[in-house]
Image (tube, rainbow, N blue to C red; front, side, top):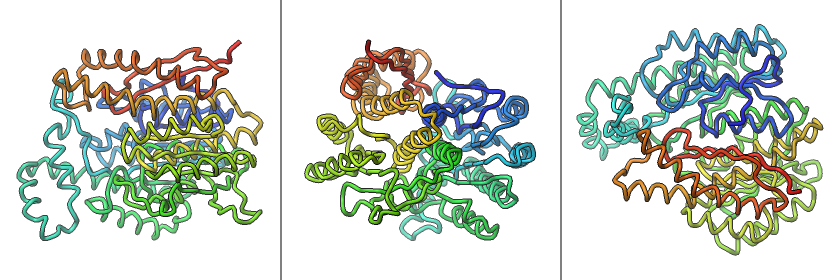
Length: 509
């Protein structure tokens, strides 16, 4: 991986949520686009999937190697517990988390003028789901237990009369001990999030966001959100602490905020939906309508939402959000995007057409390339939840805008970021991932969430063989005057849920 892992004097320090591309690679690449170094702890300290990160070593690294910086973006899940997956299991005590999070106070004491952004998560309803095989067989709530816990947590709180019998059955399937452990994990994590709110109130944290990881509008998280919202109100920090849908994009959003701040720029951002009713669209894995989510993301990125109707509200960036819609609506969308970039505005596209089907996403992107649009975009993201896609697109466009204003913009890094997004979000998820899963099914593996080493190695090799030629074709359509100078394709967590693509491009001679 081409990642800056340490720096004696970095402008921006990131303690990521974990080592996945979306949480580690992409925030670092945002810094490259803007020309601002982003230092992260050595990768060996961050863990990998079911092997958790090492908070105490990360704290030592912060004290020794990153004691001075202009800005910090810190995942409380990593700093306190060892990452997102670690935060979903028993193990780390509240006392341990408390003392580890005191590191934020020490960062503030050493860097009174630094900007410190922190992000935590409100525990998602489903524990990390893995089959009971290999090293995963002893993992917390391995299959089938996690499916029972997920179903139980997705019930209303309090239960509806129609849910009472099902809840009783689920409690029997889960067992009292495991259920209590799960509830204790949730309670511990709410207490940790309250610590972060207190740190924001004292000024140790400048900007705090608590992301509600995958959840609907009802379930066990609802009273937790109410508790935390009340704590924010009582602390008087509602202008600097928010609760929003999402998790994976939060690090990118705060890095974008830090980059915009370094450029003394508050991006003006307009939002355009591909359908008239788009603002009311509800992602099935989020607790708020998409327009509320995007409003919150714009604020989190350090921007201001504008309508563009008046000269003083002219946007710097126009975020287009493509929802499942008709071909006629796509034509209108294409014309509007062309008008914006012709007028000199930065255009970002969050493509949610996959929520209809991957085939629909593939069809839309083919039309997008035929119309010659992708090479004009300042940002593209098109897979995962609405918050993740919109947050990724906003962060990329803001990083480019910040770099241009700082006069340190790296156009090549920007092209590499956009290229990797199309290869990952489209080529992998639309074409390659279904083929990998079908191959696994044909060979007797129906669960793709955790693959044993030999099988993972075979699937990773297949992934490289299938994805590489598609990437070459995509680059030919996106930037025909460039070629792939180097590219690494892996399955970073030995599962097919995501791939990691690390590419370097070079101009054709």
